[in-house]
Amino acid sequence: MGVEEEVTVTGGTGVLELNGVFELPGGGSVELPQSLRIALATGQVRRPLAETLRDVLVLLVDGRYQLAGPERLPAEHHLVPTSEWPPCDEARVAYYRTAIRTGHRPVAVVLSGVQPLILDGHHKIAAYEAEGVCASAVVISEAPA
Image (cartoon, rainbow, N blue to C red):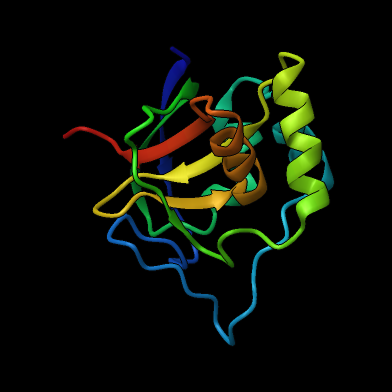
């Protein structure tokens, strides 16, 4: 199991909510910084998680959150994609499948709530499913009261 941290978000944009809201003003998507994309792709997520994921956390509604991971998601964990499913870039899925087969554990980012959302890592999740391996993810959830 991964490390857990608590973080308080103030001044968040409110684009993401635990109840399943994932909307950007005017549509579109959020582009994560290259350094974060590389860390997630290689499974080299640095501590503290709050600092590593700051570009994701600023999208949340203000409040207290718990960050956990990277951790293996249970096989029966039903995740809701926030973009096209299955992912259309078969070459990227194949890349992650090869990485998984050789022992690497790329990390997805999941927003836990009523319907757990895949915020980042659609290709990774598809690769894990194709390989029959439980996905590795950092999970953002509401902090306990």
